[in-house]
Every structure is written in structure tokens, then in C-alpha cells.
Length: 226
Image 1 (cartoon, rainbow, N blue to C red):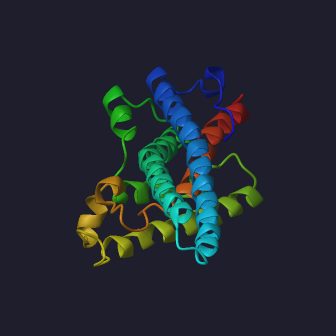
Image 2 (image 1 turned 45 degrees about the vertical axis):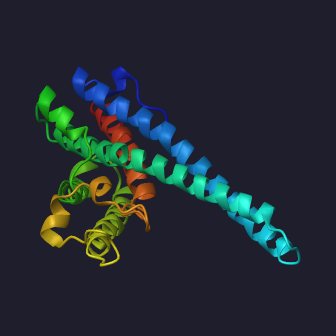
């Protein structure tokens, strides 16, 4: 991820806004590295296990493939634990960043401490959708037309992906399937079923990229006003 802008670059933010945004940035940065690394371990161990199972097929003993299978399961559980810890930070970073960018470009005053703290926690699916739906042209008004067009295209993809989460939430294969009203009010980590693909599986990377861009957009907008 890109560096987090210095305090002077985000001068329009209050101290609590800046600290909350910075804390989420650091959490996402560290966890993203660990998530990618642990995912690579899972893939490597799966490949090793496949090779071992093939080799053990001609033997009366299968200690190697059995042992590696245990490691695969452990590696997968760790990777899932990392992404489960990462999603609340990623989604909160995106929502808080969009809220602050919208505040800055529209000239509104700082958020109070309680609002910032609330926005720093994992949002409900409905709150995430609402933030993702704020018009790009309103948020990135200092940018060129080509940049805006690209942002609008990315936004459409994210909105479609977020909408698809409702289908996953209603899947009977889940321990507790949710209807649309229940799904809108839920936080994905609370509704997640570790036995199947995560609810944020297709959202993690694009929301992470968006969260990082939001912070840079605040800095860029403020620089254009000087």
C-alpha cells in the first residue's frame, strides 16, 4: 500500500479524524501483507500435498501426504483468521475515508469523537453499500474526466459485488441464512460461515484499493486548494 499522508497533507482533518484514519491504514497495511503471504503458503502446501499424494499412491504408507494435509488445514485456518481480522479494518477504513472525503470536498465541519469512533468499527452491509454509492464525481471533483470515468467504472463493479453478497447470505448452505432485511443489518464477520467461502471474498481487494485511494484523494483535493 502507499504511504499514509503526513499530518500537514491532511490538515483539514481534526486530530481524532486523522488518528482514526491512520490507525486503520496501518492495520490494513500490516494485515494485507500477512493475508497475501499466508495465502501463498496455502497454495504452496496444496501443491506439495498433491505431489505427495501422487507419490504415496504407489506405497503402503502415506505418512508424508497425511502430514502435509494437516499442515494445509492449519495454513488455511490461519489465512482465514487473518482475513477475518482484516475485513473489519478494511471496510471501516473505506467507509470512514469516504465520509471524510465527502466532508472535506463539501466544506462541512469535523466529525465529533463519537461519530469517528462509530465509523472506525466494521460497518453493516447496508452502511458499506451506502458509502460505496456516494457519487464519484462528488468525491473526486478535483480530478480530470478520464480519472473520474475510471473511478465510476470501479464504483459500478463494487456496487454489483456488494449486492451479490445478499445471494451468499441467503444461501441455504450457510448455518444461518439471512433474508435481505437481515443481511442489510448484519456485519459480515458476524454472519460469516468458516466452512464455506467468506462473504467478503470478492470485496477484500477492491475495497482495500478504494480505502487507500480515499485517503490520497483527501490529500490531493487539499493540495489543489492551496
